[in-house]
Image (cartoon, rainbow over all chains, first blue to last red; front, side, top):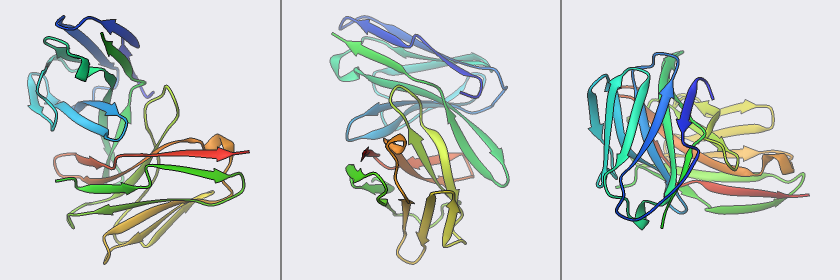
Length: 114
Length: 112
């Protein structure tokens, strides 16, 4: 997946606990993104980053925070996990070329909150 | 407001048939329109993309048809194969600010 690694791949956690998902890239891309994928909703943007320590909210940011202390790592934290946050989470980077921007996605993290 | 609307949500096609997935967009300021293909347990991957100044783009069995006046575009998969069974997402992209707007996805099943 073009140098993008997500960890863990699967996680089961209890309601109310904090959870951190990690996205690691090896290609020095400036932009990184966190999406969640749910049936009937497709891909929804949670947060994104446009550089070290530069982040912004997406359309479904409530209950999530992010940090980017190094170019290669983008962390997503569920501050107090709820069952509604059971989902598959994808990290993505964006790249440019031939006059356009495109995304490359990681393989995803399947999170279950019980 | 959802910028990109995709239909159908699911699609079942016989092997050898044509699969058609449709998308409509709201804003006219998009720079290009990609389609992503996602297999179970994997992240979406870029399949094919089209610029708004082109009416059709073909790559192998996959074709995008683009109707600028109607603000609609569609993915046609000719001679559909069981290996094409996947979820397909359309998107509309503004290069400025790296803004991506995804459709809600179509689950395609090709029956042998």
